[in-house]
Image (tube, rainbow, N blue to C red):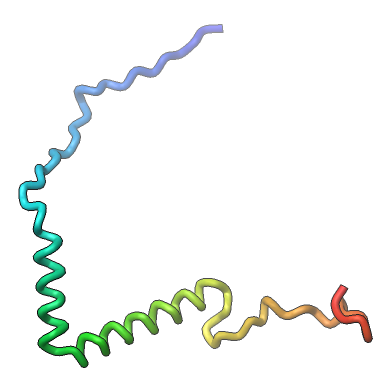
Length: 89
């Protein structure tokens, strides 16, 4: 039986250039500006934070199978699986 070897032409593939990071303090500048915004308008900043946290928790509950109304309908035990006086099988 003959073996088939596939050898890609690597010269036809162009990879994107890699940027060099020269300013390592850039994330710290972003955090400093965020803290400045927080100090300037604390109620607005905390309000937006609470809003997005609540939306995230709600979306997480929805995606975890609780449904749009928070009902655990798929977690209920069917009546035919319960034994009177003894609970669930």
